[in-house]
Image 1 (cartoon, one colour):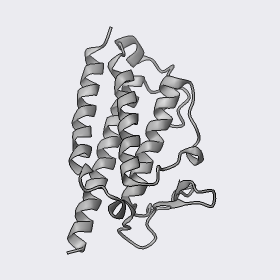
Image 2 (cartoon, one colour):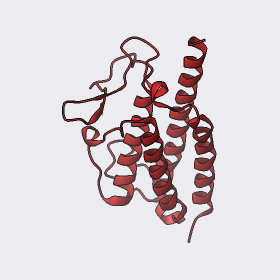
Image 3 (cartoon, one colour):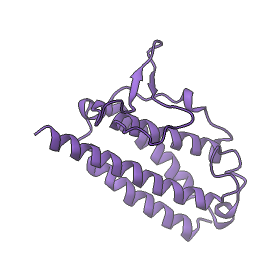
Length: 176
């Protein structure tokens, strides 16, 4: 039986997603690839034609500014990883998660990830939400309940979508 807590998490997800929808009109390729500062992290077409995100381990301090392309890759990365570990028994590594190559492709990719996550989340009962079994394989969040991870997804999405919005506003302000 679906939990009222799962329904709350889904409503929160839908609310955060509406902020992404608000910014969608401004997401085109030039906006995605605009770099707000020198040496910003972005995604780049590699030798094999794959779109690969800038990354450094350990992360520098401070972390560089990021392009919207990088932010959408980042959402896709953690959502693919989280969904894979929580609902599919495993997930690809960071290096295997490619950006689609266009703003339109990124929107389609993220929408599909959101719909898959939302459907899984909506079906959960309290026992599953309180379990740590599904989260045990996550590179982050070990020993956290699935409810904790679902709440984190909502917060992380809100943070990343806010960064997308801020970058869009900054680009518009600086381009006149």
